[in-house]
Length: 202
Image 1 (cartoon, helix red, strand yellow):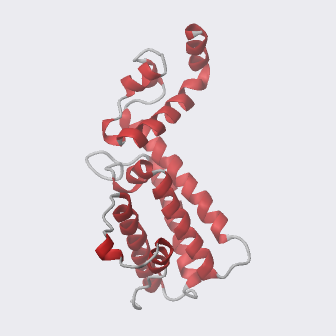
Image 2: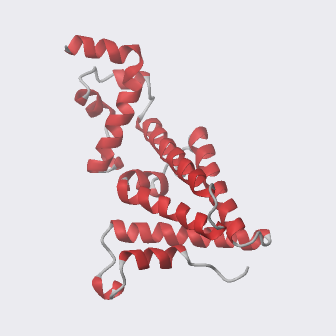
Image 3: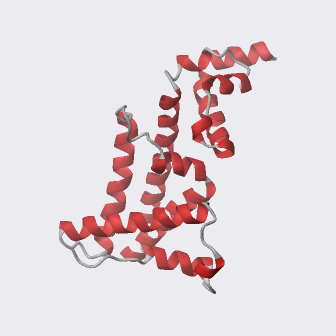
């Protein structure tokens, strides 16, 4: 059975298997400690096999983050359709963003808190393009919800909205929302407050 498994991976399955195993591993232990060699061992292939698909760990993590942004894009597109008001569609987009942070917290950290977009190495081009597309979709929904005001107002509102949802996601992820902070507010009321935040006109 082991030989058959190795043969299947050799013929193209290993790429997908590595991504799946890496996604599961980072949710268990965080992306910082991910090891290609340990992934190879868990998949019962040689330690050199993963490097035929990904030159290094950063390349694998970049692909995972790209897939995360693709999921976000799909959620934004789904939210932007239908007959709801522009504000309701924007709220649905925010709910999708927070849902990703709740269900896949380590993927969320990889996408928004890792050094894949900074440091000494330039970001992966596909990752950059996908992240940009997700931001532009969100920005377009902000513009629509605000009635398409001037560009400076849209930019300010988009950054404020992203900052609020990102900060709230991290606070909730780290169990930093203490009872004295929350009071008698329900989770739904907290989420509504975060997603309805609007900056003053720029």
